[in-house]
Picture 1 (cartoon, rainbow, N blue to C red):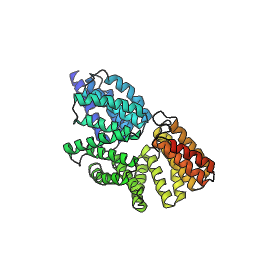
Picture 2: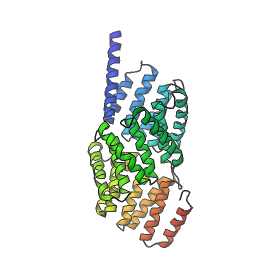
Picture 3: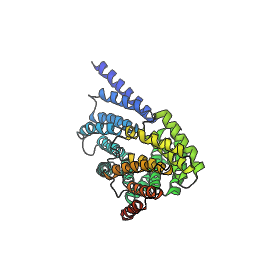
Picture 4: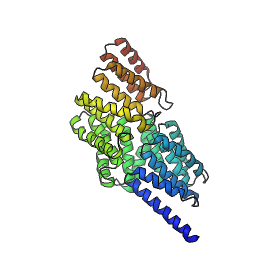
Length: 378
């Protein structure tokens, strides 16, 4: 009986090792399968170990962009984790990673509340420099960034990056993630030169540490391309956009969130370059696949719908553009974490003004200009 138990334990440990290996190279579907199989064999294992395995599955599902599935996995994971003491490392780790899933699913208020609670307990139990503490700090800051709360995000991100650099140097994936998160905040604030200054060395580190096809490398490529494009260097940006789109379609297929984002970003570049037919084709494709990629209630979809509408205005398809802007506006206004005062909603207002000016409907354009002027943050 003991030999049988040891054999199953050894098999379970091998599954976990295989799952970790697949996750490290970006094969997240295979990683999720092996984590799930290892957890099924770990019913007699210590509770903390079972929580770790289920958290590994959750992470792998999030990395596939399956946010609705991740939220479904979160409830049984939390129920198990809460059987551990409140300051147990495995429990805190699991709760923080549920916050990451909530952020990906667009549940920003829930993510901020969860990260805030977990981070306070981690600082007390583990210390401010502990890797798990800094991971939660970065997650909270990224949630603030997506909620337009930049004044709260920036000091957290700068502190995280400084602590990771001091402990691990720049040639470490944790430092890379923190630098990328700070660069994304700069991009959101249209501080493109500052973003580029962070992203160029970050991409070099990602290429060396993760390889050219890893998801995090491609995110760095995409963000750097965006920083370059938004400074007006369109031809220089083009290879970055084309690389990201081609690689994600090859590796992930069209229904993955990274592919949808890449299609939309490439459409924006083509529009700026004057290739309106190509821009419309890619923008439409991103919208066609976004529900499968993000889930039908994720507010991130408004970004792609707005980008599509902008291309339709450029091609003088005004009635279609109006329908798409109405769709984007409804997505944002109806979502509790966004609403009409969010920067994404203000972007839609600007597109309404541009649409109605181009369509020669000055009264409608003036109406949206007044709304935009009255919106907080304008």
